[in-house]
Image 1 (cartoon, rainbow, N blue to C red):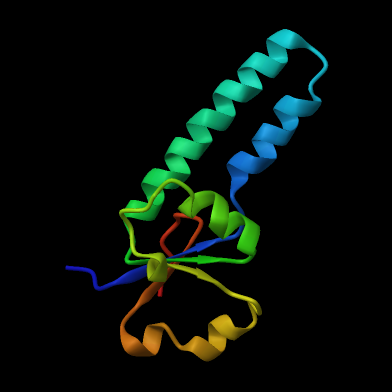
Image 2 (image 1 turned 180 degrees about the vertical axis):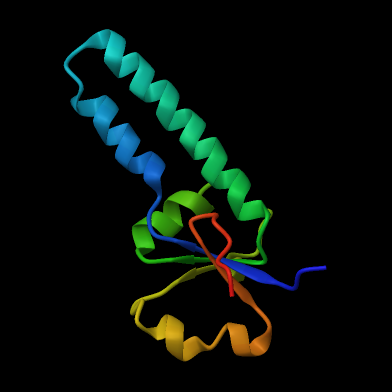
Length: 107
């Protein structure tokens, strides 16, 4: 059985897709970009549930993912002010698998 894992979120991708929808001049394409943004948001929120911790590279992304999820412990969602600290944190040394954007890393 795998041990605890932390999901490293490089960004909240759904925010980027929402931006595509806002800037799309074609109403039909805008509609499909909005559908895509909703699907990506659902996926990203579901991915958070599979991990003990979620690490974010921006406070704005952390807030977007945590919004509306009051039932979850805020301690699960951490903002890394300095991503270079990932090596210093030594997650692996304490038995925590670090997963980037939902893809498990081979050790």
